[in-house]
Image 1 (cartoon, rainbow, N blue to C red):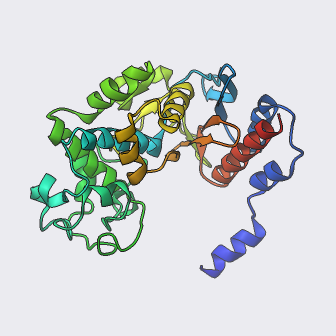
Image 2 (tube, one colour; image 1 turned 45 degrees about the horizontal axis):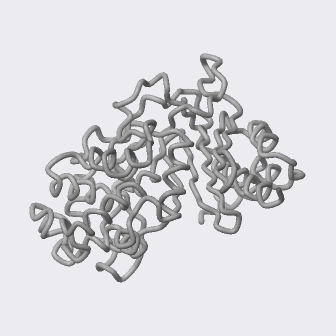
Length: 334
């Protein structure tokens, strides 16, 4: 690390995150949510789904700071990489239907990429789902701009074409949004229509989830929480990240219901569940500019906790993690 970076850490530690961690633990989730706003977060929404209890929603801060609109626990939010849970679920179902094979290669499914993505004939669907493909991450490329992301998935893919692999297939792990962009393309080609339509009919509809969408363009922008990236003042709500790796928009309650169903076995049949367990995880966080999300099932208290924070940048992401962990501590004490 450069000396300047070390000096910055020493002289300018993430005070909000530290104080959020050191402050006495409040007695209720709402008190913790309210206190989060005092530590640099513009707005926060929390969903708590405890077994045997009605679901609870909490909110504090702003939905839209400029318009003076308070945080709304039912507002839509860009969930970023939490989208990958839905894509992996769709893949597991199609594998179970024998419409896809986990051992099928990128060359099998998208032969036009042979010679453009290194080891395309050795990278399997399983490796892409598990981030073991070695395909470079499109969002890590110098040309990628979170403030002005590509308007088409092909533009994102072009950022990594002819770029050397990070490692040989299945020899290492490296989180890459390109994997799920390609999986989305494979699903589309296999289905003959957009995979988000499949997710809607086979995953969302059975769970009664009517406030989850594949793309920002499908919703009324006024229903979406404004996003902020410190230290800038701009509202980032209208920036549209369209890659299957993180394109979805949903309410905290819808995400919570989905995560519960994914974990308790009520969403997938036994064969589908076995496939899913072999390819991906059961919780996720999400990040797009101005939006930080966490969705997890805590088995020790049989509780799903989903947290949305409409602030990124500076030390706000550490603060959001600290706040999430404190909320779980409060629930464990109850």
